[in-house]
Length: 419
Ligand code: LLP
Image (cartoon, rainbow, N blue to C red; front, top):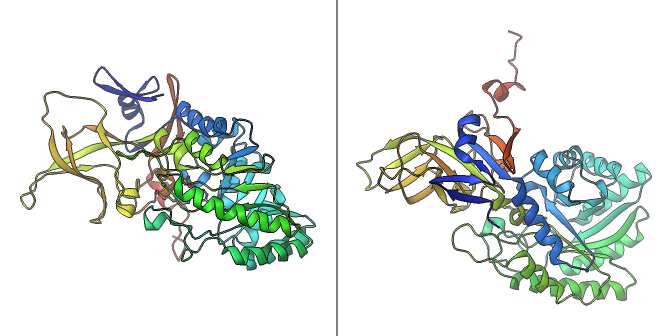
């Protein structure tokens, strides 16, 4: 179902006009569709049919409380990677027992907060971390439920910055090391082995790398069973890609069905951790053209907009392509080829290159597929207050994060001497 649609020369999210949002809230503003978030989460959940499973939304993709709360109400689990994400999920009403804590650098404080909150599973990424979790659990007189994150050494065929399952990547432990660590974990009194996990990367466009990794991990589960180490859940990570331009990623159903076809044990609970596939296409970023800058140095003009790489980093960091469309149509303006750039003082500050668009000063544009890794990767670089966030629910919209103001930029700072 299409939650973003054009009607009468104007773009709508559900029943709300984006022009109205831009007029009321200003720009730059992220706008999310609640219905789209729900539909994508349910697509994963329904795909499992009767097979025991847990869909853990990857909080890093978009950690706005309203987004998390929307998914928590559906019974979602959550994949977190920091104490900050833990606090957000709890604040948004997430069930601690359905939280999975991943990440290579968990601090003492983060581990102890997670154990005290009663998170469902700690995904361990090294021997040192395994011992640290056991020490902290001993101190707290608790038993920590763990899975070991295994690096299956599979090429996800994605951008090198978002591939995580190759042996040269910092994530997880090699299969042979995992065998040793499970035996060690079994001997540590404050650890309870429950699962096994992998995550090979992000924006993966075919099921083949997932299946390849899965087969290696299923063989490892068999080995562990033979050692009387029982594994009750298998976490296959996130990483399912989405359509930004003309990619044709598998649907959640195709992806889950492909995985399940290799899993013979009907009692093995499968966890998935989609982030992008749930929220990317549930959000857009609204930005306004400040200037049309004609350039005698190159054959095309620049459209300078009020959102920059500090608001949406993906084009600058990964050379990512995201569709850019004016939210209103004015037949009087002729399309031209533009580079769409932000106001930040970096040459990498572009949002799109060579886009044929009908623009003038004041045109409001929407940047598609911005609901994942958009606001969550934004910063205050160039002392720019961060954008507002809005969620649309049917025919109403809500500001779910106010635009930062100038005082927010330095309210934590102080001078050397009292002024
Ligand atoms: N689970 C783990 C352990 C992860 O590290 C990640 C993402 C996910 C799940 C969710 O992956 P997803 O389903 O969203 O692909 N900033 C980059 C993406 C970085 C992904 C990092 N890990 C981007 O904008 O493309």
